[in-house]
Image 1 (cartoon, helix red, strand yellow):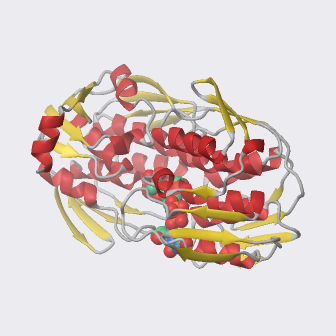
Image 2: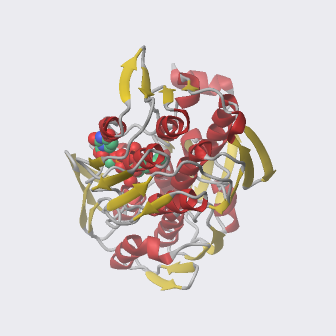
Length: 428
Ligand code: EPU
């Protein structure tokens, strides 16, 4: 077990390079199973979710060859299995994409229910509705989701709520189905567009990705491709907040500024200065953050995956701010960790009221999930004194070399091993 030890209070300055997008990578890797030939995927983030998916692809029978740290060649031709076990699916939401990918590949998928971050109920009813519309029979037996179809036929699916996962899974199942599939009320996140671009580069016929109506005309075969994943919008946003929270000055390179519009708008409202370049943004902050109101929404609204990081900024803002979580049932567990550091807040259902204090106090805290983990790291970086962050395996799921990147920006953050004895004492 490991933890981060942070000696905070220093303004972060310098340049950070953003890695490939986690949520695009975790959709594109299972999608390789739909190809009849090997594919090369570039700009993969070095995170544990990607490592887990690559292991799962190997277990299914695909040949996975690392060309370098961020490029992999995958030959899916030998993938004979359609079963993704509980051990493979555990801890990762994206394992559900094997349902759509295997259904599209061989008409049969048996996948353990997805794990992933815990912020309330995470149903997959819309995914199932989509598969059934395409002609699949879906059942849940012995804790496994099984989808089966002798043939898949295009159909029209209206999503009851905007769902990233359902949009992706239906695209995966429909890409080789016979005829036309239309997904209405589809998600519009950048990773949806990236997946569509990847599939189209293999010969798929997908139109409208990035709008709320995606049309997929099924094709018989998909060929090999070489594809580079887009930069991670949320990783970029996280470093933007770190710049503002520490009154620093960071140039964030390898970004698509268009993907950051809602984050840029909010961080400017809070008092930061943002300069946009073609493929980078610079964030500087000189004052205490101003209070603001945030409502998370599907893209192009303010992303829920940036809510905890902004919550940290607002915990030291001048005045009382309100956050409304519009995507998940509940995503405020990080505030309990900030309370240990002296934050002042009240949560009522989907709304959090945060009254800024002058500064937080250093304390031992935990990463309760991936973005909550990034949030408490930022809290530690902006707070004078020693803050420790435990349960950092959640952070490693989605942030590449986070301690190294912050160290390069002048932070004092170290990854240290927690002895088994210490860990056991705390768990008792
Ligand atoms: N929902 C349903 N039924 C469904 C599917 C979703 O009711 O069948 C509900 C969910 O309960 C939630 C809302 O719809 O209230 C949106 O869920 P969505 O399906 O969009 O989320 P997801 O696909 O499970 C992805 C990201 C999350 C991100 C959300 C929202 C991946 C692997 N995960 O999850 O990312 O928060 O979209 O943008 O892409 C993260 O990266 O930290 C993370 C949690």
